[in-house]
Image (cartoon, rainbow, N blue to C red; front, side):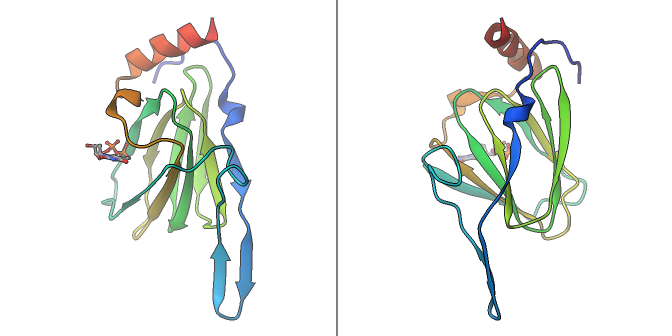
Length: 145
Ligand code: TYD
């Protein structure tokens, strides 16, 4: 992946600790929109049964904010703003990775049985996606200038 643009937005991608209530029956974590995440939650989706060696993501969103949680198992998220690149390994159901708009993300290294829960600030809209990295870089350059 070429690193071609100026800008430093990756710090806005951060791992947040979620509440965790533990008792003899097990653990419970929760997420409240506009409290634990800085957006109203309008959509929930989840990735599961990802084959060993499989990849997901490979896109950036124009407007949508997301929180990714490894509800079960683990996986790696590679983030770039076209300038910097960062890898985050998610493996804890009581943590989430906040990804603001205009961040290219790729996901791989899914463990067997991994479940990636995604809380999103918008309903699905195919027009909100950059699915080609060169298109994304062009948009990022425009946003950084
Ligand atoms: P895709 O964005 O390729 O998945 P990922 O980036 O997580 O690997 O989505 C796969 C298909 O699912 C694609 O046809 C769009 C559709 N889809 C919805 O209809 N609603 C949704 O909320 C999402 C995330 C995807």
